Length: 68
Image (cartoon, one colour):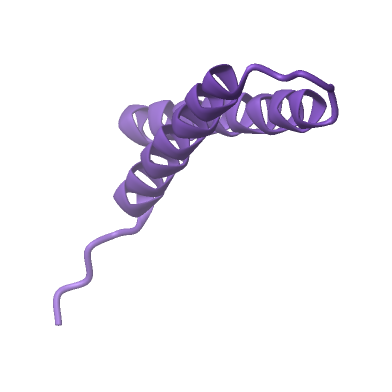
């Protein structure tokens, strides 16, 4: 069974992945729209990258430490 901390991390990961996917779709739609606000597009892309970094940090927290 998952510990409370691990289940919290898994839940956070799921939420971040969903937000990352939503941002990807929003960026795709905006890129296909003529006259898109470039500043808005850059902000969305930066936010998407921050979320990707958060996902990577959380995933590394789920990997158990192995003593060598």
